[in-house]
Each structure stands twice: as structure tokens, then as C-alpha cells.
Image (cartoon, rainbow, N blue to C red; front, top):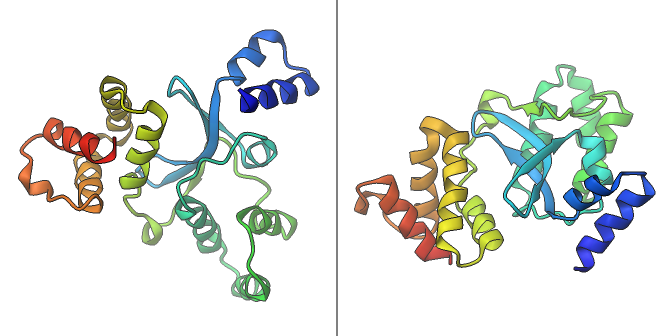
Length: 204
């Protein structure tokens, strides 16, 4: 309830109408999403499992709780930006700045913008270079799903079906990776449905 009140207050200040206030009050939190195909997106979850994408500058200003599971996707964004920088001297400047002290993700992104590396990351996302791609939609994502839906098995499988639509042919690998990280052997399960049930039992 406290989080919802905070969201409503924010939207009143920026002049949103009543309908928009109700929609935004259902936000669970913000994070960085991956489509499993080499693109990363800034956005936020709603409590009906809907996802909204925004540009980085908007994402930074959102007062919603950051529900990212660790810093993996944030590091992937930084690596993608550094990889896309072709001027060696600029990379040296960044490395020197980054090593002075521990930097937050937001500080690093602001440095990139202030020094002309990027102007923003639009809601269309940022593409990773081939050598920084990884299947990252595994244990962390299923744990996020479990946290959102609780012990509701039907909602858990519904959420996984949305992941399957997003990942397409990479979905079986996603399930296998999640099972391995949950200390289970994927070879024990014949179908995706069997794997999904095993994952649910492990994280509920």
C-alpha cells in the first residue's frame, strides 16, 4: 500500500489523469529486461505481469523499487556500450575513471551520457555485441516470477508461457539452465511441462 501511494503521488505531481494514476499504482517495480536475442530494455512490471518499456532517462527518474535480481543485466548494458565504443583513448579514459572508486550503474550511465558516448537508451533497447551475449533468463527470472505470483501454480505457468513466447526456440535452453542452477539434472525430464513443474517445485 505504501508503494502504491508513492506512485500515485508521483503521477499527480507530473500531471497524469485519474485513469493513468490507477494504472501506474499497480506497478511492481522497475528492472532491465532481456529478450534472449541480444537486446536489453529498461522497463517495469505491473502486478498483472504486463511489462512496459521506457528509455533510460525516464527509467532512472522512476520512483518505483528496483527489483533487479543482482547486477547482471546492468553489467551487460555497460559492456555493450563499452564494446560499441571504437575509440581506444576514450576506453582508456573510462577505465581510469571507473577504477578511481566503485561506481553505481546510474553514475556509469550518466558518465557515458555526459562524455558523449550515448545520448540515451531508447525504449527500443540496446543491442549487445556477440561476445557479451549469454542466456540470462534462467534461475533469476524464474525466482522473480515466483516472487510475483507466490504459490499460485497456474499463475506461475502462465508467466512461463509468456517467457516461452518471448524466447521462442531458446526456451528449452532457458529451462535447462534454470534447472542446472537449481541443482537439478535437466536430462531427468522428458518434456518442457515436466521441467516447468520441477522448477515450480524448486522455487515455490
